[in-house]
Image 1 (spheres, rainbow, N blue to C red):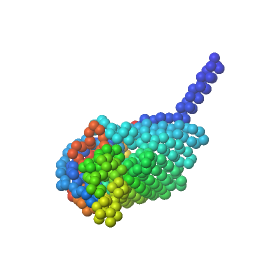
Image 2 (image 1 turned 45 degrees about the horizontal axis):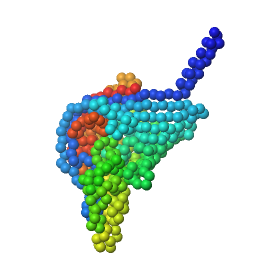
Image 3 (image 1 turned 180 degrees about the horizontal axis):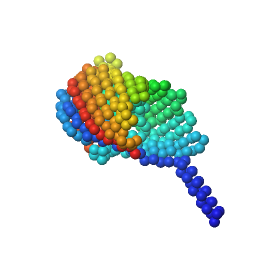
Length: 461
């Protein structure tokens, strides 16, 4: 009898130890709010950086916007501070300090009960190994420049971090086909490297590639964030439109449904003929480059200041190169003879900077106050105030008020809204319905002052 009891006790201890070596956790965040949006609306001028068309001489021209139409509404809004999401994460202790890890993360739309149309686990789906060397991850991952951007100022959130799409420097919040490496913390310094593969067999550029680098450094009362991204050949992923179609939409860095790199009208003739009927290789949206840097400094135990700078630029080099290759653009003599088309010239689609300042004040152990100001070289600015009150470690109430004062924006001098701010951020690619019908989801309206005021609750589990 004693032997049996001893054996059962030993077996139970072994099972407990085995269970402790491996764990799977269900987790999530819910952010929902009641919000009043003033002077918002949608317009043809909100697409960024505008519709690119192709003329008969093979020279790219950029479309201009239309007059904005604005309005106001009281609405229920999702994810204006944190991203409503859920996921499953797990780890297994392999011994010797080595662990196997995985993460599956998807969206949870609180205003309509849907999820994102682009995939159940759009936010993350990766597996990897970690140890004293750091961590290696393979699969869909968060874009490192988005992580760095979120840490530029003391009190940010989705609305303020919308600057990444205002300037277009993130070009997507997640990277597919990614291989990432995160170093361990080394005397306050941590680096993250990530490469997103093209995943095409013939060397084409339909999916594009991305190279990302992020650096975080903590010393004394200061924290420094910096990041760089180069996304090449961002193109019409999944587009099946013919080359002669009026619009062929490319991957949207905003993460929504807006046509960020829209290419269409590809009807250029070569030697009196027409180009092939379907040519996704020609729908190159171009290259996107982004980089940023910022510092946060704790002046007192309760007050922290932050300063940041970010740059975003895009060009249509690969689009033009692909189109010239397809159309076999000729020399001056061939063009004069009428046997080949004129070669198009690559041009900068947008180029902008933003300067940021923010303050965080821990008024009480449960009350955090924040203020942010961002100004862009696109003649636009954002003013943001926040109050966050913690009811517990998992539940927080908040107020947020934001005013976006937008100029003409920038796109080779056109009047489109690219480069302007939105007064509220959140998940916009959700199904079965959008956040607020009729509200612009891509860029703030040009020459318009927009504002949003909301109270909400965030609960984590």
